[in-house]
Image (tube, rainbow, N blue to C red; front, side, top):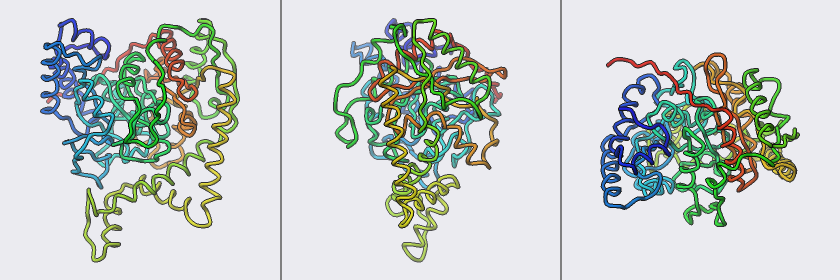
Length: 488
């Protein structure tokens, strides 16, 4: 069944009566049936629950109970978001079979908005990775080239949206895990200001860095989805309680009069030529539309990766201590409690999660705390200071989202440093807590998507979306991947 592939278009069609929520669901499920054997974007598709929700959405709309632009829209959820009555695993064996008794706040808000939850998408185990190859249930693949990765850790969500087996999806972003897969799959991915989207019900990786956000086909769709999920939540102690930006009102405002900074440190060695050329061409386009382009230097960005890989594992070592075989999830018996916990964790956690727990525990240990974790926090403060200085001069910043396009599956599995460098452009915004997003701007010579990152100061989503919308207009990116269909 042919259906609109954007939230905005599908929402209009629902209200015009040219299709129903059940039609939309049939379309995405048909697409999933055609593509899942090659992509493995989903860990679980909730056929029955989604059907009930779609029929309820149609009944509500027929009765005049319109809940807004997401009413009847099929949305996928990264499988680290607690979803009542649905297995939630974080792509880890240690949570195999665990079914939460409650919804994450973002899931509750989607349900209240009338969205239809299609299922749970694949990810790197506990969101630790940049390729979705660390999943305990097998990797996901890129719709543009099924021999390549879709990025990570929200690679399943990005692949589902790119393939059309969901009209939008939620991911989580700790060091780039929404933006990098968006760049590698030709989708739009948004990491909002830290604290604007509730983390209640998000299974934590690194609590001071994690943020939930949307992955969609278009900038407008991302704004629609973001506005549905953000807002103050008393269940999250870090939730922002002030006034929120109006992201949609400036989508057509253009960039005339804006000062846009190009980050000097996010280019050069390690960046593919096609990526740099595409970003440079887009910067020239923004200048032609009236933006003032300024090259800016953020020296602290050069050590952001090192700081991140101390702070994030340190927080992970604390957060993942709750998975002990006592309360929920996997339990491997032993003669003593300590042996039971050791066996459970040994069998339940994969190698990348184990690596990061060990690194984080070491960084927090007596005698090393100040030299490693404490020093990393000082670097974090320097990054915030650098960004505050630059944002006093410019309205927004731009850079590549990823230094490369999608890389072949398996190419970096045995080289953790090469894998970690995938997030070199995205990590600084997480350390600062500022918003950032990725917008597709073209294809390289192999037909693989290239993403451009737009960054803004804290609570600067309105200007960020304004720049992103202009980037999208200039790029005119409307290509769709051709996925080979496996018969039967």
